[in-house]
Figure 1 (cartoon, one colour):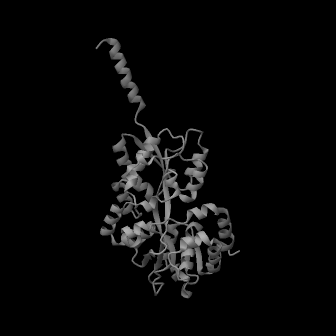
Figure 2: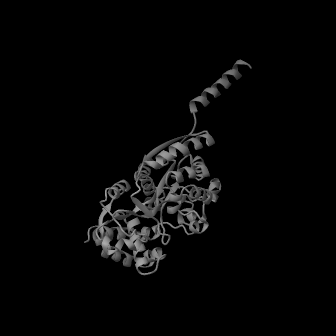
Length: 356
């Protein structure tokens, strides 16, 4: 090799060393979600792609950071968000279209999980996370509540607690109304076709609610301390509580079962869109989905759901795992909420939470 060729080759090598590996910046939820992402997703992603991955954990701050980002330089390359924040963000043009062909593992998901405008518009990959769960303390309720209408039994007046956010608890009231009217399985239709009827029902029966909880840990602690007899609850935290405290009980009534809808979305203008799509594909691989399910979450992969149900009866009692159950999977009625958000929020705040 002559001197000129040697210098050229050396320069290329030095340039490659300085450039380093590409880095995917991902927003994740703090707590258990971050832990599973760090333990299961990050190693799988880095092994598969050769790129590195940084996680930024929080709750409601991702969308604000994206809005504050310089044009063409989003704070993140991939974010997790829920429907309450994700729908407005989609309307504001914060996310890029995803190409399902680059995310082949989406074909492993039950179609009902993807039967949603987010996926139809290619704005992200939605999936079910937490199921609305009916929890109670064994020593405080002689006849355990097994249906949502049990929460308005006379002996429970003032002894139940509901989540303060309407996206969940308004739907709880819809389930109660449907059951009380002998029309179980119609809660979604009630919210869509008789929203004011459901809101007025919530106002009428708010007297049954002793207090409104704000965090899952707060509510679990209140149940354990016997400060509430029953409540609505997020399933992942309740599953963990059931394993730790035998005095607690939980059930997810099969009629009107509803899930929190979360979604993986790619911010507009990220230069790492292809890498972000590869990351989403890995997130829906059986191995990563299995890790999330073992930590207490639902899964939209039928094969993983069956495996979990066979191995864990407690998990099976909360989450859908048969073909019939998975095909019936539904989210909270976010489409109605999105259309009437301000009206619902105003009524909820003034006339339900405050009894105005």
